[in-house]
Length: 255
Ligand code: BT5
Image: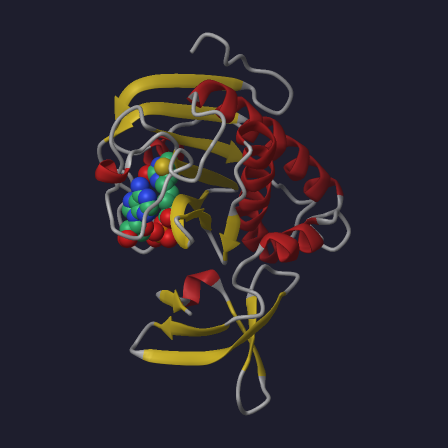
């Protein structure tokens, strides 16, 4: 793992053999912008809303980065960060592994295995003071009998040409740096840095009728028609109303 050197945006790259959650560690640490933490094994990986991310050691990538969008990017635009990470990861995997991934709003990376959509990656964005800690989990070389949940897939099962974790991690970090820098330079406006366009092009949710389950047993059904400037999914309901929903409002999103 010695080939992972700091540089550019990435001020430090720490690789640990095992930890509970790289996101929890980086949220708790006093590290500055650009800190990267990678674990070979993660025993208490977290998803959104108290869900877990579980994957066998060394068959996947588990890492987190700390970013400081700062005053130049209004806080309501920060909802784009997990979507930005999805775009960056998808383009890196396409280039470095030859695997096509689709983005399921807001934070899932899907691959196609035997004609079916399977989740091969997830992204978790958490506030830590004025910073955001972005965590990415990717199922890289998992075989069919190693999948933690029936809906999971892996890059290997999707026919990846490369399943070495180091080159994939380098490709994702490079792509993340490029997209993040452009987005920040555009004041976080996803329309000014091609992010909104790239997200829409890679998003499997748009154009589908989805059911958004909201807290308190409420649900909203509509066609997903857009992702707005704040990263919310806009649903067009049968009543002809356009209703934006934020990732924090949704418990589940089902086709
Ligand atoms: C996510 O949450 O998909 C975000 C996952 C982020 C994981 C990374 S790893 C590095 C960093 N450190 C952390 O502690 N976390 C981040 P969510 O959308 O809530 O999806 C969670 C759901 O995905 C679970 O309830 C399972 O159904 C499913 N799941 C769990 N592990 C999976 C896996 N390895 N592959 C596919 N699906 C999985």
